[in-house]
Length: 83
Image (cartoon, rainbow, N blue to C red; front, side, top):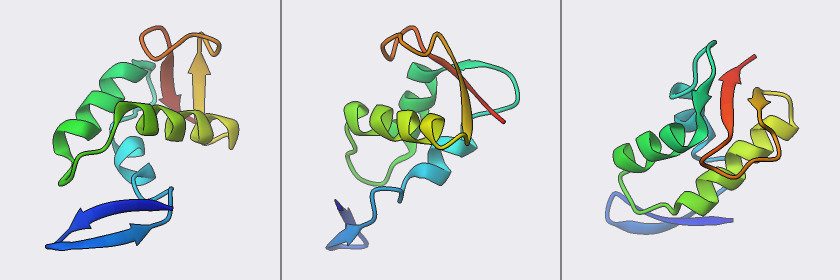
Protein backbone atom coordinates (compact mmCIF):
# COMPACT_ATOMS: atom_id res chain seq x y z
CA UNK A 1 0.00 0.00 0.00
CA UNK A 2 1.10 3.49 -0.86
CA UNK A 3 -0.07 6.50 1.17
CA UNK A 4 -0.36 9.84 -0.66
CA UNK A 5 -1.79 13.22 0.16
CA UNK A 6 -4.24 13.86 -2.69
CA UNK A 7 -6.85 16.60 -2.95
CA UNK A 8 -6.41 17.55 0.70
CA UNK A 9 -6.77 14.00 2.05
CA UNK A 10 -4.38 11.23 3.02
CA UNK A 11 -5.38 8.24 0.88
CA UNK A 12 -4.21 4.68 0.44
CA UNK A 13 -3.32 3.66 -3.11
CA UNK A 14 -2.11 0.49 -4.72
CA UNK A 15 1.66 0.51 -5.16
CA UNK A 16 1.12 0.56 -8.94
CA UNK A 17 -0.58 3.99 -8.67
CA UNK A 18 2.40 5.81 -10.26
CA UNK A 19 3.20 3.18 -12.90
CA UNK A 20 1.42 5.13 -15.66
CA UNK A 21 3.44 8.23 -14.76
CA UNK A 22 6.65 6.19 -15.04
CA UNK A 23 5.56 4.66 -18.34
CA UNK A 24 4.64 8.07 -19.75
CA UNK A 25 8.28 9.12 -19.35
CA UNK A 26 9.58 6.06 -21.23
CA UNK A 27 9.79 5.81 -25.00
CA UNK A 28 10.82 3.18 -27.58
CA UNK A 29 14.44 4.37 -27.28
CA UNK A 30 16.54 3.69 -24.20
CA UNK A 31 16.51 6.44 -21.59
CA UNK A 32 18.43 6.63 -18.31
CA UNK A 33 16.27 5.42 -15.42
CA UNK A 34 17.42 8.32 -13.25
CA UNK A 35 15.82 10.75 -15.74
CA UNK A 36 12.58 8.78 -15.78
CA UNK A 37 12.43 8.82 -11.96
CA UNK A 38 13.42 12.50 -11.78
CA UNK A 39 10.76 13.53 -14.28
CA UNK A 40 8.05 11.71 -12.33
CA UNK A 41 9.24 13.17 -9.02
CA UNK A 42 9.15 16.66 -10.54
CA UNK A 43 5.57 16.22 -11.78
CA UNK A 44 4.17 14.39 -8.74
CA UNK A 45 1.54 16.26 -6.76
CA UNK A 46 2.98 14.82 -3.53
CA UNK A 47 6.43 13.79 -2.40
CA UNK A 48 7.40 10.36 -3.68
CA UNK A 49 10.86 8.98 -2.97
CA UNK A 50 13.28 8.06 -5.72
CA UNK A 51 13.81 4.68 -4.03
CA UNK A 52 10.10 3.83 -4.36
CA UNK A 53 9.95 4.92 -8.01
CA UNK A 54 13.10 2.93 -8.79
CA UNK A 55 11.47 -0.09 -7.10
CA UNK A 56 8.43 0.34 -9.35
CA UNK A 57 10.66 0.60 -12.45
CA UNK A 58 12.26 -2.69 -11.45
CA UNK A 59 8.77 -4.22 -11.04
CA UNK A 60 7.79 -3.03 -14.53
CA UNK A 61 10.99 -4.59 -15.90
CA UNK A 62 10.27 -7.86 -14.06
CA UNK A 63 6.74 -7.95 -15.52
CA UNK A 64 8.06 -7.41 -19.04
CA UNK A 65 6.46 -4.00 -19.52
CA UNK A 66 9.85 -2.29 -19.82
CA UNK A 67 13.12 -3.51 -21.28
CA UNK A 68 16.32 -2.80 -19.36
CA UNK A 69 19.89 -2.24 -20.42
CA UNK A 70 22.60 -2.70 -17.75
CA UNK A 71 20.01 -4.59 -15.74
CA UNK A 72 22.25 -5.13 -12.72
CA UNK A 73 23.26 -1.48 -12.48
CA UNK A 74 21.96 0.95 -9.90
CA UNK A 75 19.70 3.84 -10.74
CA UNK A 76 22.49 5.86 -12.39
CA UNK A 77 23.58 3.07 -14.74
CA UNK A 78 20.23 1.56 -15.65
CA UNK A 79 18.59 2.43 -18.99
CA UNK A 80 14.98 1.55 -19.80
CA UNK A 81 12.64 1.64 -22.78
CA UNK A 82 9.10 0.59 -23.56
CA UNK A 83 8.53 -2.75 -25.18
